[in-house]
Image (cartoon, rainbow, N blue to C red; front, top):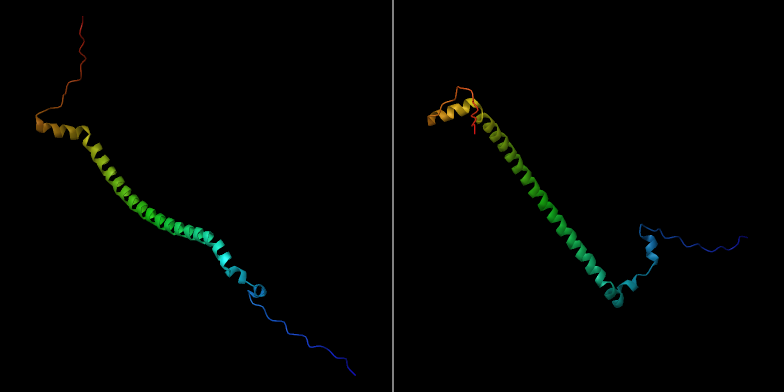
Length: 118
């Protein structure tokens, strides 16, 4: 004759949150507990708003920097062309051509030093 055995209950399969299913969270929804955590909730909400505002500000600053870099590049090119024009205009031949219209002529004699004797 065989002995009597008791049926073993089957173990429940636990999912990802299976370990948490044994805990009771009713204490978290109590009135006193909810009021206790309201300042933390507002603080975290405030931090979230600051984070979002900072992101928008950073995006705006990046756009402004890109626009200023384009302007600087245009001004750099303009500076280079103006500098080239200035160098060409300050050459001796260019100066002679510009002052001929005023009736001035180039001095062919070497420069002499005037000395005054006392």
